[in-house]
Length: 303
Image (cartoon, rainbow, N blue to C red; front, side, top):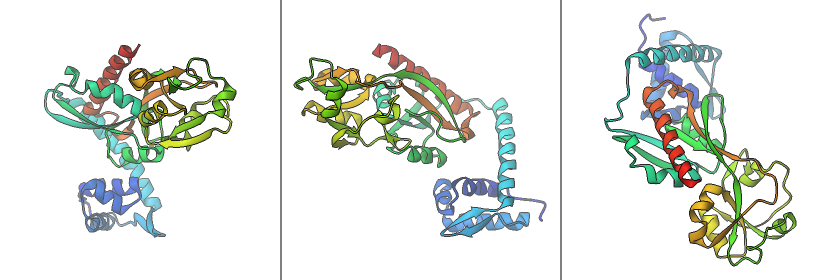
């Protein structure tokens, strides 16, 4: 084994190991696929070991690769801690972050993107994907710096922090026959339902947060978002379930009535979620702190 190793090769190895794909790693690293393959070949030649083997149409790490990845994770942590002692993040200098938000949080945070707390930093935001697997993949592949979602920690490689909790509520059109009275459980299941495509833990939101198993609902329509479901409910005799913050923002203007759920439901807690590789980053710690403070301001204004 050669005594001198190009340390840039280790960063390529880590991405391939983490993503389990040379093609995906090449996209994340902004490299060509042959470039990634050549970097792995050079590293294997330097170390004198095989790091990956072909498995089906993909690759699988060898025992040597697993041992190397474990040790590099420890080394990376030590380096991050050392850098933390000497590096500072200056929010007065331009910096861009990408934050992926659940729909209710996006409607709370968007009006605050010009807040003085952000200084010269710019946040670009996008809605969390319908699948929690896709949410995780965005973090793994560095497609986003921070996620705010309805779920807690998704994977062991992520960290999370609870923000605030709110209720799920039901909205119906003001013209609905039951708009002026409390809808019973029996009436609830007799009504037509508009459901959102958003799913967590392979369940729709109502089923995920219900304390007891729900009966079969009569689903008549699917919506891409909570706001779209509310708009559909406002023009029909159907009902939909959304977070209370979103209902409070738009129910009046949409001609909707907010009603309590006719079943026991857990509160929805919004969480900051990030990859542990960013745990000690001064810039990322600043981002988590400021976003948390802005959302606390937004939440207080809704009370």
